[in-house]
Length: 411
Image (cartoon, rainbow, N blue to C red):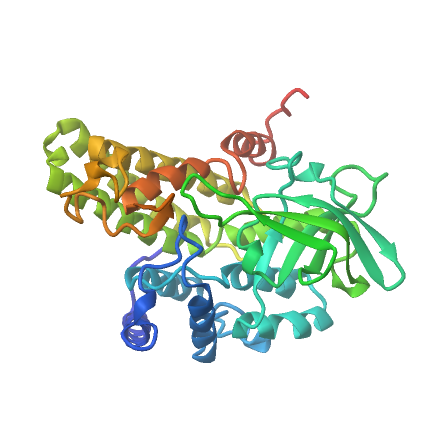
């Protein structure tokens, strides 16, 4: 792969950079840096307006085909947009689940009516989405879901519980993997349903995290209903469609993730310089190790993203395992760099007198009336990285069995 940018690529990067600079220095100035992992609670309505602004100016669905409202930009242009978005400090995306997961899934597997109904509101940010996969008894073992859906005339009736559902509390719709064929083998009895959340049969309970915020939720379906037409693919094809969604989840956004991690590394380095931790050889070595691993993550992501096939490849599985472990290690490095000062919150006596760099940046997450700084939030939130989206243990099993064709783990 030739990674050198063309003249047109440079012009496109300038176009993206200029748009973001103008927007974030105008009406949306106050959104810079808000809404990332660990502080998804921030400025919800303002970020909804931001999503609509992006859509109105053609910056949502940029990789979608033009017939579905997109711009059909090639992968490397999507990467440029993600990189510039993160570099500009633009707010965490509220619409990314709809845009990067639901939309591509419907384009690949949905029918014409589903595409007409659901794709335009995603591009306009008129409807927000969440993902209904994990359950209390079926987290990483996705084929073990127990949520069931039964056909009742022109509707599906959904009963069960989902957990760790990101942004469910602000979402309008949820794509739900449910068991519609209880007597079929585990992978063959599943269906992929689109379920509206604003109904009596749905209860959403936010989960308070270590950071004191609630990005994740429990979602209870008690006779919730959705139209019979809202099954993507045929009933029983849910596993294939769900794996397609996971493949999209581990796509071009990985490159923007590299930039986000790089900005966090900048915070760690600034703190290390401010408090003298950078003078310790072991800290310098770990900083260099993380910087090298970030470069590897970017190059591997570019290599792995050469295929547009909607399937979960072994390469995509490795990508998730790699970044989750890297980010967890970054959180531990952040805690070690902060040292004893990282054990107190802003508002505690021990935090008085520390500079912004020593605190890892502005404290903006409230915990019992006090604030976490960025390095504290990074340490706490990154503890979940090796669990959500497929735990490391299960990822290694899947890679061994599906990518390397090794014998199955004894049950």
